[in-house]
Length: 292
Image 1 (cartoon, rainbow, N blue to C red):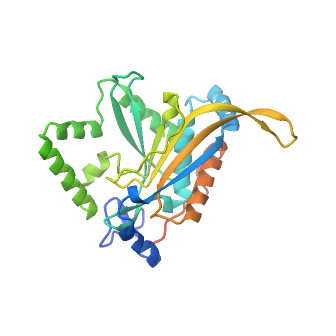
Image 2 (tube, rainbow, N blue to C red):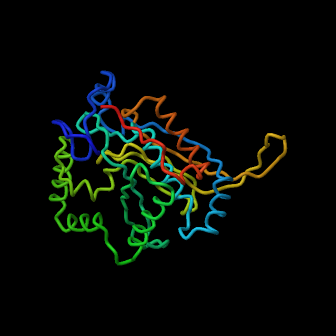
Image 3 (tube, rainbow, N blue to C red):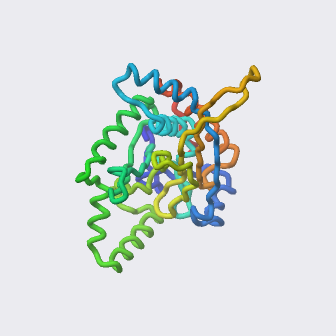
């Protein structure tokens, strides 16, 4: 983070939050794991306007946009305006993440035997929808190549060359080092589990959104899932029956990072941005900084 000088107790991927209320400081000692701290949100997203926006935009833009781009760009903007959602717990301490990352699992081909890979994208808080789409498409295209291996795949392949007891020791050691904030930076960089938000588009598999658990390894505090689109008949403001398009979005969060009011505010903002993607065409007027 520009202008911030690292202090004792900070990590290379986050700064220690020292001005929190005592209640928030003691919560991680009571709820010691993310599995123990998960809370679940479900939102019904009206995508009628967003789909119309995509059709119009894609007729004149060189960058072809999709709902995935909107979900990703809305997440980046939400983290820029609600920075406490980019916190994580490690070693029973609460940290503000230095950067915005989104992890995404993709299939190289939509077949049963096609390999799956995970991509971690780094974004700037000022990124627009166009910026997010270009960065995402570049990496997705590179990773869609059947023979292509990203840094995550290569690291996993090297580790799996070892016997099982060595793999168990490596993972054990990584957990310990991560707990005390000494996990090597290159491992954090390749780990999809050290990310701001993990997004899964299960709609591409033809199913509805799932509640995906948070990983106890790494520092991910938010998991977003969205599924298939559907048409429903609703009554509009003039009491007419009209067709509207909807998606279900399900979010799993680590409740230790912020209170319920903040979570609710962030989820409502996220939903509003998805339903009104034109707001993502320009950078935010101001990027909000988390507390010290």
